[in-house]
Image 1 (cartoon, rainbow, N blue to C red):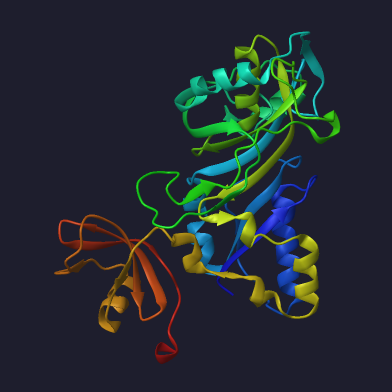
Image 2 (image 1 turned 180 degrees about the vertical axis):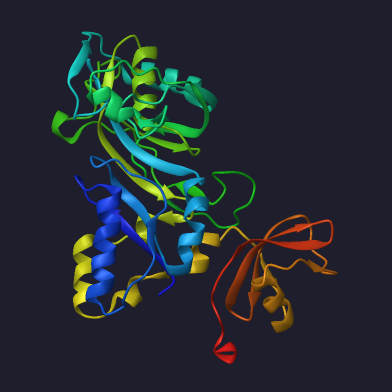
Length: 336
């Protein structure tokens, strides 16, 4: 069992709990003990794409953490909480409400490279302790600014689809299906021109390390008010989207039917952006031993070395040398 299960993580479930659920499902399906890890933490209040790596795919979990992500999120204006979401206590209020035009005018200021302060309630380590542990003790937590990149942010839902062609930047593989501005479903009719908004739903395509709760806080402050996140849904993580995500109920059902393997994506699904580099059996053996290959013509960059259809290693081509970045313990039937 080597590959990916992409969960549509439900509200209220932590990422570690999701990993435990997959481990149970694997045991129930008769798969035995497997290495399992996730490719990017989601807050318990968040939902959406949570890549779960199984077996040799766990060696790529770190690479998934470094990937870009796309989120839908709703900002409620008028109140800021200490956690910057629905869980926290209100620490600031404002009677100011922006219009849709004001929101749209402010968003370009949050596009491109920006600096942001992570939430005090986050898993960042400060002197060996989690920031959220310090915050829960009532201690003042000074969060250092960090540089992140917002590739795109706009009003509307996050309905994205694969785009033919690809190539040429972070958004090249996906395009929006709909750019109609949203309002909260409970708010009735869409806002009229100049109408003040109680909340707005946005979609953001962001780099690793971006905190959506901080982004929502800063957008509200730029609009002369305060705000907090009331909905957060990840719709893309690296190459994985909601189209390939499954519910926990579907996972449990497949486990009971001993069909969990049918829900798994191959290990290589996490490397869709990496070109293949075919190698011979002898070269594959050398790579599995961590040796450097020479005499292979390949431009500088990352490659997936393959022996037939078997992934051998993630490698880097450098000065006519092929160097192992991450090897996979997978063998072809001929090697058994």
